[in-house]
Image (cartoon, rainbow, N blue to C red):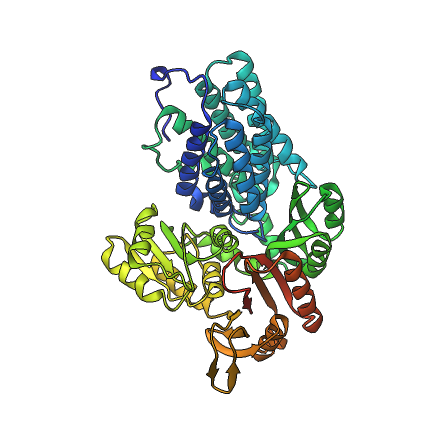
Length: 558
């Protein structure tokens, strides 16, 4: 591990908002380099996603938002980071990280620059926010690491309030020690012979900040393996105790569904929401403010959570994962991890809401475009060349864009694969099959299989009179397309959607994602989802503000 030449460095008194943004950009790059190793630390029988990947996706969202403010005061940059972290948070580790960033930003409120005292104050608030966001905090996790770091920063700032670099060196060393202590606090870590994954992620982020302050961000290398494991005592069984327990069928239980969503509304009471959600499941995280609240819960009845959320406001970024399916393959994955690869995903998307959804699922770069806005080969080539990876997967998400994407792939020096996704739902479904740990061509195969699991519905208006098969379509009629083929036409938007659902055999479907466009307001979308729920009570319906033009609704149905 690089330790730097402390004796040769100059004291760093403070940083501007621009430098704050840059140091977290370096931290995100450092996290990206180590995400696979952090993923390998997951040891619990029901993995709630991959810790390193979830933290990385959260940081990407954080930095995307941090690029927006024109004002470069520390306070403004930190506030933007907090917004990005909240909306991009994924999984337990991502949600906790978003709380840490939220608290960090709160501690910098009104600050023009960042010095040792301000850093210590921000880390103190980060620790407080992290603990407040969790219903049942557990030591030996990333919570402990951020708490220990905040305490060390307070002492360091009191001793020397003029050297930010010295404070961060102290902070990173304390983070390392705190991570190494996590197995002493959690038996499952000690038995598995690893440290806490989320805590390691916090260490990596802080180490990235230190690299920036030292001016060593161009020389960063992978963390030494020794930090990722602890030496087992001779009396510890070769098979971890929790693995043996999971192998006993008499101890089996239903783990249910990992359910995540965002509520947008007015005067949302975070404490009351948390109390209710705690009564419905386990591993509860409720974070946010009066207008936006994110919920994470493990529950046997995700539909109840969704209905409750809809009663408070509009529902966004709904994710439901079957944890009983996850744990069946967990041990095999742990024993034979897939080789890591450095792959970027480029997607063509129209609509601010849809762009956020694609970014949240791991898309590196989004090209604005789609129906009536087909990007050129040059536009796609520019996006391919802009991403940091030499291996790239392109999602055209429209049949008319596939040829331009394939042409761009032939003129770049990078290794590019075009997955011929023909719609937004196919692109999103393909991303669910993306695994940053798999090689390029294997990823393409998995994503190709994933994209075919979904049916795509697109609803728009006819721009002229026409006849399609037996359909007599008039200009201004609403038309429903299923997998790119016009199947339904009518004068009523809602009725056209219901007819399209009937044509796609929604009685046998299970999950629907409803992306509403810039012509539809929140209440209309929610009312439609409730009407569809009454007609198809078996459906789990996700409502997302897509913001796409021309298409009031784009619908994914599985």
